[in-house]
Length: 131
Image 1 (cartoon, helix red, strand yellow):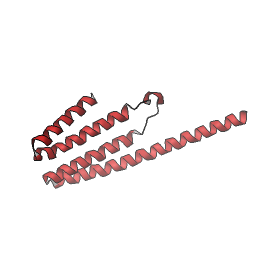
Image 2: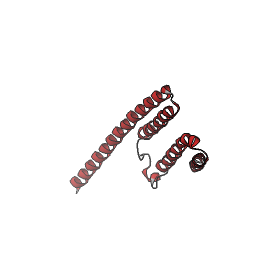
Image 3: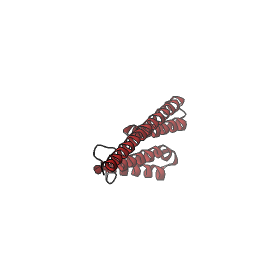
Image 4: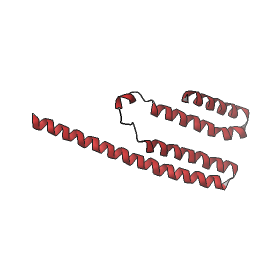
């Protein structure tokens, strides 16, 4: 499904670039959306992801934050192209919110990794003591 969305957005972007410079400018947003879609697909279907069980490749706040950041950038850029200052400020706010959420996700990832490392060291120490 995501692959189909990616191909459609990429085709629309190509038509816009070939068709007209002004329409192509707006359709660059479609290219950004197509690349984001492809990124989501790559993150959610990474090889070996099924082997992790309940553990995620990265925290969902990291991914959601990055998506808000990119969406805010797109909205801000569209506001710049159209001269809409309100859209620009909303885009900037979404971008900042995304950066905060992304950072929070990275903090949670680091905490989870530290906990996992500590548990591994405890298990190794128990095995050494038992031997």
